[in-house]
Image 1 (cartoon, rainbow, N blue to C red):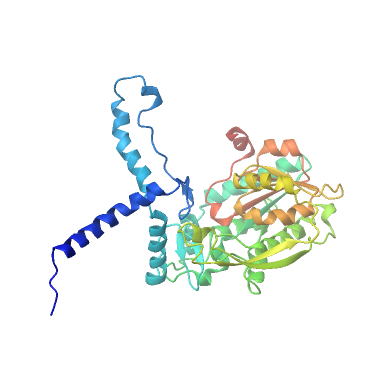
Image 2 (image 1 turned 135 degrees about the vertical axis):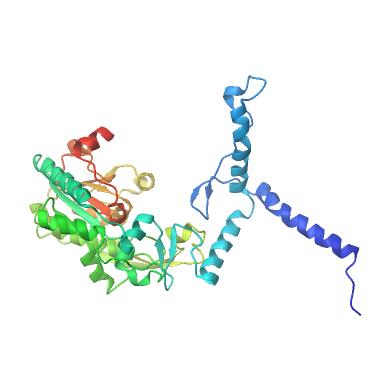
Length: 391
């Protein structure tokens, strides 16, 4: 005999529904308050003061503050809602695994477990829709020539190092939904101009990296950057290019390394959607044999903090027979640090897209290396005077 739902069933359904509605709030109140979203890797909204300090002695807060308070409280609760990270992870996983779609604009889901950075500049550069006009190329040539000459007047060599985007090397793993429109890229345009004008010494890393990629994986699958194998290829190419400019490096062998393979949680591109555990990375690391430039253990935490905060720092062997350098860089140079530091007496790492004349004048190095990732080529370079005024 079929049982007819009764009053108790209805009450149980209502109770379950109410419990589910209140569950996120209960979990939120029971959980330890955090400052960073583990799923999105960003700072969370903070609780706004109920009465601003400037209004604490007045009978009524200002109308503008009252108008802004509900939105601020909503942002706070949205960021602190219980089970939020779990729901974000579930949402992202279902999009990738069930639908084959990206759950976030900053993530491109490629083939065979490859993730790519959804940066607008990088996508346009990959497709060939980003272009330099004649005026932009003229400006790049003018500024790079000026940097070369300004440094040469001070007896300092200069090298521009151009790092290709990950999809430039591993385009076969990009999704078919993002096709290439034009084969020539902005990087091609700039390299062609520099080759024809010799405005500044440069190193295009595409060829050595592409050759290495035919043998081993040299970029992370779940991050936008190269791995240690890729960075070591770049390091060797930089040393070989500088040997003709710096006699101290002539005949010097690259630092010896040994491989270290390990499985780690997924890296940056997996973390931004909270799926670092769902997509582990086979990390292909290299360890420097007998390092001379590695910081003492007591300085390691401070160095890591400076790298994380993008602050300048210096390393090196202290060997007076080796040259000195300043490297103006972006995040791709992080993996270069253990290798380059072993080939210079002192090398200063500065997170900066342009040449900062104040740093150069303070350090007076033998060489200035400027490393630029392809996706940052969209921004025009600053002249020496403009860079000085920007400080």
